[in-house]
Image 1 (cartoon, rainbow, N blue to C red):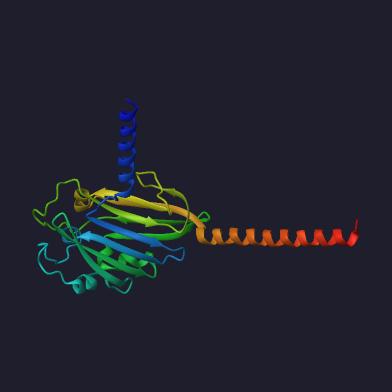
Image 2 (tube, helix red, strand yellow):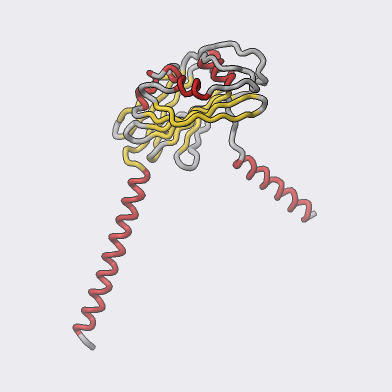
Length: 240
């Protein structure tokens, strides 16, 4: 009986661990590493069919067809976003592209054709920084049968640089490292159902606060050391 209970406990713990390790897979994902000066590093990870359906780009839907990375780079390169790299992968019979970009000002990202379906705001509000993004109409291009089951998801993932005070993600969670995820069904995104994203954070970065804390601790250690030396010397001067 005890052995059976132990095996059951191990199985439950293993399933929980696997659930934490295995990340969700999305047909389209925007991952934004935001800085307090409104600059950002942006990653787009998407299946080719999703890019065709949602953004209306002309790419081959056949996973075995040659995919021109330079063409993907040209889609995303713009005056408001510089493409750093383009890579590809395969999953579930579909080809995926992975684009990394540097964005000097995320507030202007909607001027890029590939991000024109979104409006972006980043401003100070009541002593905090507020970032918002609203995704609206998609291209709505038909891609036929590409293996989608209807359960596919898209996501926007924000990595925020300071303490989060509010966000409207339905998950109500903040992952380790101040990461917040907003999800939407791919079918809804194809229909242009709006995705509203709002988050607020403190104006001081976590890194700055950490360095300031370490600095204060270092000063305290030095002062304690000086006080100890003064105490020892004063004792010697006074004598027994």
